[in-house]
Image (cartoon, rainbow, N blue to C red; front, side):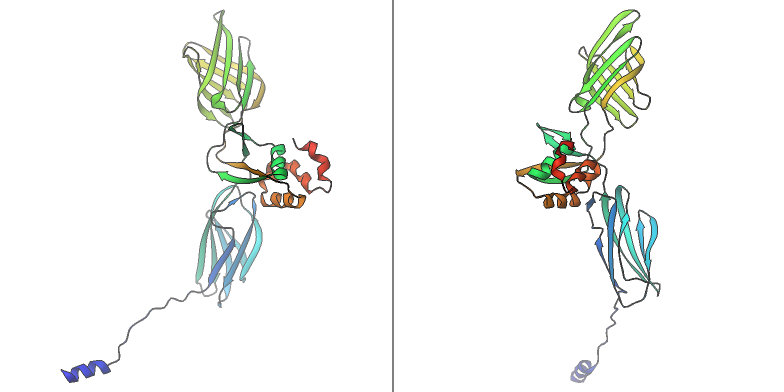
Length: 304
């Protein structure tokens, strides 16, 4: 027993160890993971740490591949990204055919409307609202991944035998109106309210409406041809020509919510910094550029 134990103690144990050598480290400083960008031109800032020779840096944006640079260890330039969600891959290709890559996801929304709270409801902000917030209030702006509130909507239309007056102050689904005309030489009238929105797009506004006596009908507003049609169980009026329309824009999927904080006084330098940080303000309200004018206070009357 003793010799065998000594032999075991004197033997040299060997163990196989596998080491994975990483060809390099990729740092992506911009775009940032999960960020909502308010403009389309976004900095792409990349640094590579490696001792190997680099063949090139590649970006794959939603499956579209393009080369950023060749024989480079860094890249820092603005690139255009369309509105919507982006899942990009930054890939470094080395001369020895190895590669490293990282994934980044972000959203670009430069076109959504801005809403504020007013008298307990959400309404679309005006440039005057934005200017008031910039001048006098702390505020937060957040991106809402949900359907934007409906705009107000007013439509007036008529034909030889019918007329329609529809209006809503806060949202289409709170709308109401009157329809009057003649059916077989008999006077017809319907006071109605909106029961449900079937479609609210750039081309059509289609509503289920209901009268005071539970009469049900469908109101179709063809925005391209400015025509209205109303069809119920016992009546139908079509080819009403629209002669007045206000609001009634298509329902958008996303919007920005601007929320007011405590009252403060800002310097013009602070206002300009906020405009730089929130390009969607000028993107939606071009006349806010007056804050960059040397004599900006003279133009307050144009902020409407």
